[in-house]
Image (tube, rainbow, N blue to C red; front, top):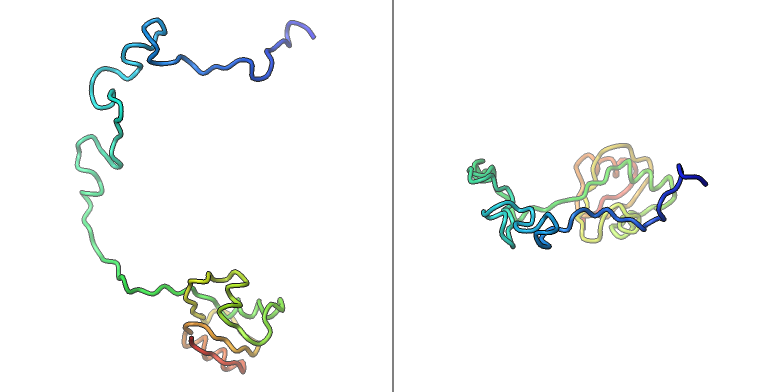
Length: 150
């Protein structure tokens, strides 16, 4: 140990800077580093989201268009190749149910499922889910399986 490697103990020195608004003697009293007058100097001030200094904000300048269909049904798509992978991993044998897909984490319990025709299916499966594409249904039946809509 010598004078070149002396340093204070860990956590004994804090450099938090000047405390503001604690009187004139602190050097940051008076306006407490907020400047003079105006909304920003007041307590409780918060700028509105998207405020552009009085200029017409972007969300009001841009026109609205389109609509959201409240009756739309969102389906979670699962390809035939995914079903074939499950068969190869021996997760499913001959029957694919909605519950089996939920257990394997492919869909959530509140999802609607649609089997898509991507990939190739070699195994003969009895698939029962909400919907099928035409190509998926044809591929399942060509492999000797059955496509059942819930």
